[in-house]
Image 1 (spheres, rainbow, N blue to C red):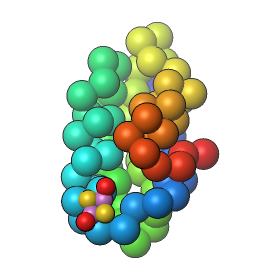
Image 2 (image 1 turned 90 degrees about the vertical axis):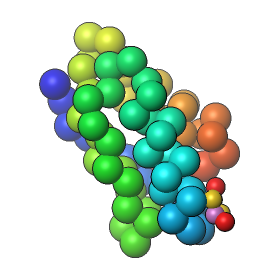
Image 3 (image 1 turned 120 degrees about the horizontal axis):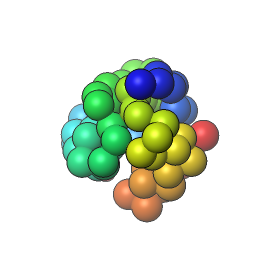
Length: 68
Ligand code: 9UX
C-alpha cells in the first residue's frame, strides 16, 4: 500500500468533498481516501499494483476538478 497527497482545485463546498471521496473510494485499488476542503487536498492510500497515481488524478479530473 502506498500513501499519496493530491492537491485538488475547484472544490467549493462539502458536497464536492463528498463527491470526490465517493469517486476515489469507489476505485479498485483504493484502500482509503480522505479529502479536505480547507487544505484543498486528498490523502489516498492505494495499491500501486492495481491503480496508479496518474489514474487517481484522472478520476478526479473526470469528476470536474483539477488534480496534481
Ligand atoms: Mo457544492 Mo461541489 O454546492 O461539486 S457539491 S460546489
